[in-house]
Image (cartoon, rainbow, N blue to C red):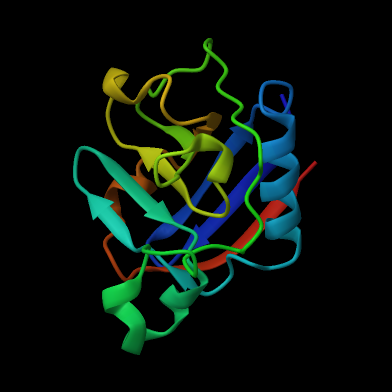
Length: 155
């Protein structure tokens, strides 16, 4: 396992362990973004009960741009991971944390999501980079517009 990432939100705090050995490039990218404060103050831009909760669009800090949240090339850090790391051993079970993308896993960047239920239909399509280890009830309470107040890395 890799570092633990702690996600503080307006609805509570949760933490996820990372699968650094399975997705080293993606994890180095996410850890760097967290350490730079990239996610701090962003809002959840996608929340579908029983499916996923997602964040990672820097424009979500701006309520005037809500119609654009999560869409287009500006909905990222601007530096895709550049490689599709799809560990077959890691499944989209409830509490899995994965990298979102728009059709090409190598173009995944800053958007990450938590599955709120077992979703075998997502296996092999998105890189699972971690799993919730604390505060597992928090992601299901998140709604579109809730704030990710801060994310930190515990190594």
